Image (tube, rainbow, N blue to C red):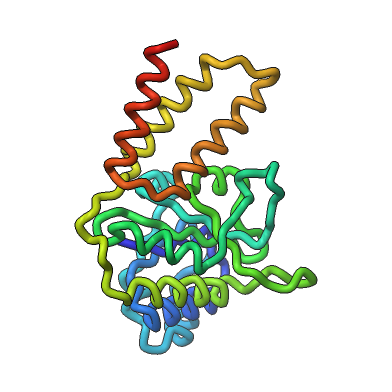
Amino acid sequence: MIELILIGPRRQENLGAIARVMKNFDFESLVLINPKCKIGITAYKVAKHAEDVLKKSKIKDFSYLKKFDYLIGTTSRLGTDYNMPRSPIGPEQLAEKILKLDFKKLKIGILIGREGDGLNNDEINLCDILVTIPASKEYPTMNISHAVSIILYELFKKISVIKSNSHIGFATGKDKEIIMDYINCVLDKMEFSTAEKRETQRKLWKRVFGKATLTKREAFAVMGFLRKLLNDK
């Protein structure tokens, strides 16, 4: 299941526009994390025939973000090769990765940041995959409803295609958590000149395994390799 998650939305107009876009592309599940505005008359007016998306939306706190097998963040702020948390992929690449997953069984969240401020670093670090929409260097920041429309359109194009890999099981959030526990144990046994360098490695491997969209078999193989690596030390 794919859920669209808005962090601290402030404008009813954006809530309505996003609900309408979701309806256009067959997405139904909307989650609001600590919203700064209510779902009122203005939101319903802008939503037009997507009132049901607003009515079924859920209001949650930040702890809800830990429930996902895959969490996808969105940003207009790009990092360098040395800033792993802000090294995003494009919407088309994201759609290809999600198409590989059993998205009807796995819990996948697409995280949309605040109007004007986007996602902060702590929220970025929670994400397995980061996506950005190529835009003008002079004005790269898009309205959140416009950004959502592009991302959902790319997903809709891919998801509407009949899948040929439905028999393949993919790694869950729990599988990735186990892998990262092993990674952390390996890193703890290594010497680093600073604690920051160890933390950078941890973030790097979390992002690598998030982007990899491992199958169950691949995840178990990685676990086995890391377990052997630890036992041989």
